[in-house]
Amino acid sequence: MSTAIQQVGNYLEIFTEFAKSAPGQNVPWLRKLREEAFARFCEAGFPTTHDEDWRFTNTSPIARTRFAFAKQLRALSRNDLNAWTINRAAARLVFIDGRFAPELSDSARFAGVQISSLKDQIASHPDELEPHLASYANIQRDAFCALNTAFIQDGTYIHVRRGTVLEQPVHLLFISIESDAPTMAHPRNLVVFEDESQGTVIEEYVSIGKGTALCNSVTELVVGENATVSHYMVECEHRDAFNVSTLRIQQARSANVASHSLLLGGGLVRNNVHPVLAGEGGECLINGLFVGDGRQHLDNYMYV
Image (cartoon, rainbow, N blue to C red; front, side, top):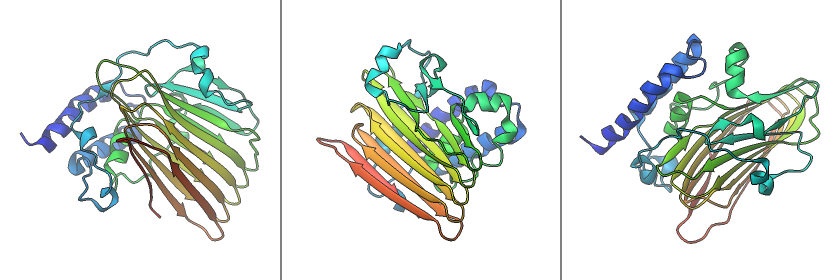
């Protein structure tokens, strides 16, 4: 059996089991989306340095590792999270190994703003997700996006209504926990700012303990006409961690977006930023900084 076939076979077993109880599996469009995404992943396989978009990043350490979902959530207290507190954040949503932890989260109610876990939104109002979820991230071009889409389960849903100004940032904290076996998480975030709205979103990826872990996240950021949005991505996981993150920005006319990426931790980290200015007069500022040492591989990649 070839290595590529064996790699796909590992995920086929996991996907088959996942599909039996995945959130929203009774929603036809979501079930079809997952199936099509997994088929695309099986067709493409993990990218190699022969692929133009990945010529500087060797993903073989990820491809040859047999990952699985964490079997149970480790109990954490709020004191465990003190190092990652952002004062006066409008809301903080905490995810442990890719799963929402409501007992560690703070989600206040604001007029014109909806903030919830993606899993809860799938359960309550999947119809509100359909116009945007997976409408922008390219599963044909990127196998990691395809894999994330196949395993859509949890993450964040933020919807800021027209003309609403969110004064304080929304903090999304993703934590990987030490485990005896390699674990994976595929957080999916959908963030929608309607016309003339404003706000800031901070994604932070950290670790507690060591152990091999893969966090493969996708964020679709939809920004309406004349809206102003700042997005921050901070990666500070331990050296045994793999992190592949994708930010897909869809901007309407005269929208203003600033994206800031800071890569500090991880053993192999790849941050993809793909903005699309779909109307005239839009502005998109993209900043990326990495500070590594030793054998760390930190790659900020932009595709326009």
